[in-house]
Image (cartoon, rainbow, N blue to C red):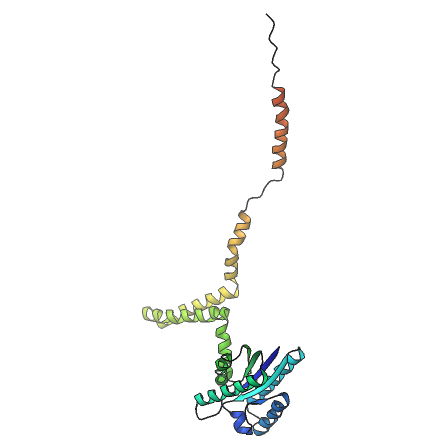
Length: 251
């Protein structure tokens, strides 16, 4: 199975800083490109994205896949022209290597918008999002928020009580004093925290099954034997109660 590991640079940072002609494909070519980008701007996040693409390609190769790593970059004076340039480069790579699937490596929310362009041309097995650990910018916040909203349990635990509290607070403030409203809100949030912290919802969920197990009547193992012995004991008595018929006497 052949896989195309595609590193996407929609803003054309890699091409502008190195002057390389896109697309760049092949292990050695991409490895040399990492050095050029790092020397031009060591703080550029594209360096980590390129290294991640090389790592993914290496892991796929070690597992027996035929992996090809490549870099595509946008160009032009608008986002539409940048996307069209990326589309042409992807078509060129597909014609050259004919991969079965692709893995897209991105390092920003803007680069991730190119994923539908890739999916329209080849099946995408995964999207690898690179977030630098030391970064504390809005992109890291975006990925963390997206991961948080994707967790259904976290949404129910945090967002639902927070939304109820925001709805109840104005009503309490209008009906009562602000002190009473804040006290009621604190009590509501405290009850929710205790409800989740003590896992009361899990206990209530398992209550019907426990009650059903306890209320199921058990069978007495001796009842079949008793009924059988009763049947056996009644058989001789019924047989003994029968009397033989007398033969008619001759006249």
